[in-house]
Amino acid sequence: MIVWFTAVQVAVAVLAGLLCVVLGLAGRKPSDLSLGALALVELLLLVQLGVAILAPAMGNEPVGNMLEFYTYLISALILPPAAAFWALVDRSRWSTVILGTAALAIAVMVYRMQQIWTTPLG
Image (tube, rainbow, N blue to C red; front, side):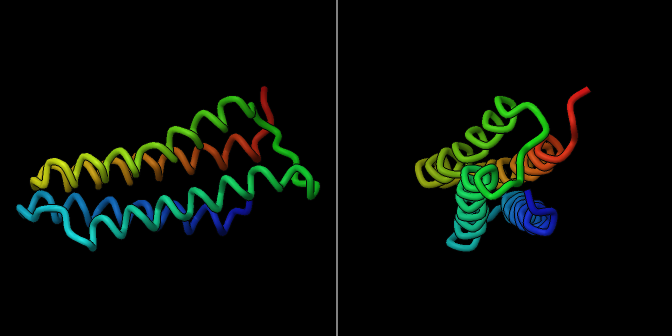
């Protein structure tokens, strides 16, 4: 995977997570800003899915365990819609905190996916 793209993904996910957690702890209900931040994280994950599918055909072979990589990727793709659904149904300040924790968890997953793609086993 491309290092700068991973850095952008992690930065966006961390900023979105911190934004949502701060808004939630401040007592704010989910807003367009918090949902939009999580939507941006999801968009970047969809781009990463496309890159992960096309990269081996372009000669950028992964060196780690691909089952673990795709497990992280699928889990990360499921989190934003699930958190957004929860936020839209619950509409409490805690659902905004859940949006933030989902984004922070995705940041960790993206970092781990980069390690799997570039670090050899063993």
